[in-house]
Image 1 (cartoon, rainbow, N blue to C red):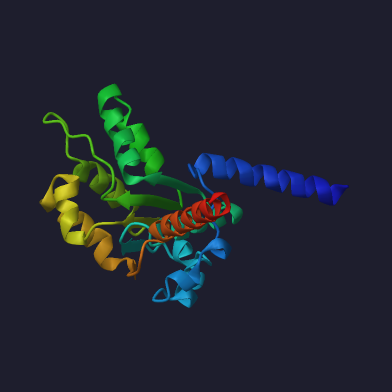
Image 2: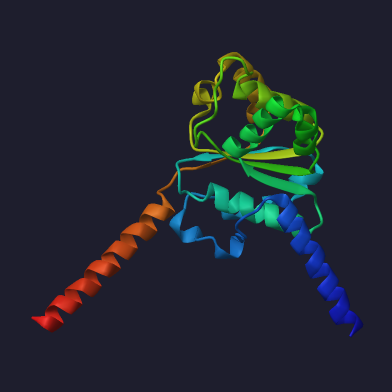
Length: 224
């Protein structure tokens, strides 16, 4: 009975950490299709999954085309961090920056910036996807991201996925000069993983289309 109660409390704490982290999907490395990305170093990824990089306060940067598994892997890392009682927050880049910009409008920017800067592991997903809000009377997205990463650099771990080349970050974030400072503090010194492979989502879509086509063909043959 005591063992069951302990397990129940542990599961409750894990559930609260996951909810607080912002993870909307619970991805695992066990569910990752390693055979689909043969160029990916599985041993290296599983070593990173031990989360020693968080304890060393190192940063991660995963790059590659959309659908190659970058987000899946970092979501799995974030879930493992929750399981190991490591504080973690997960957000798409566009959502994080929208939240900081909202703070400029209502005077809560310092509090929001402090909250994003606090967790032991911050996962910023999909730099390059989603349209960032741009107004002439507000700082660029690059300024907001720089302020956040500058607070964390060397003190806490930040893991980022990006679907665009690093040289295109400046155009996306709205300020090439500030973006260079971001890359100097983060990308050029982070643990880098580039996934050079096909899109798993496109693969699944083609497989489903093929299965539908075969099913429709079978129906046609049965009714002919």
